[in-house]
Image (cartoon, rainbow, N blue to C red):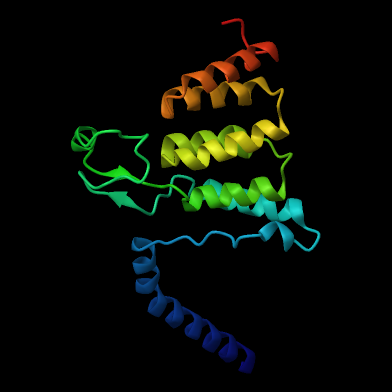
Length: 188
């Protein structure tokens, strides 16, 4: 009987704690701020380099479209390549400015910890460019991937698309597309 009351007491304490913390958890979801891994994380893996990279990759998958900064129309952009004139901003009600974003920092840590893991280069860089609109981060991830996998035609093709469509760098896009064709890409 004594054990039953101690279990009941513990259960009551846990239940009341959950009821107390529930509104705080909802408020935290509304003001979500994700902390990226610290710089130089690749030197502090304690022999678990791949495991740490996998953990960061799985965490990135959960919130890969997270952008913490938005510009209102007509604000000045840091990167004039994206929108060269002020008229381009008038049609965009709320534009994401995610240079050096949480998503990029997570992929940066993953690619530094596990450079031979190809999914961050193939899927991660594309996600950075399309969902997060972190074009500078996507460019850095693509370039890092091309150093590790210089003959992967899919990576070359995706990087070519990124340079052509997002950065309007047709010369670099053509170079990458030719390399993709040389390394087994489709005939077109």
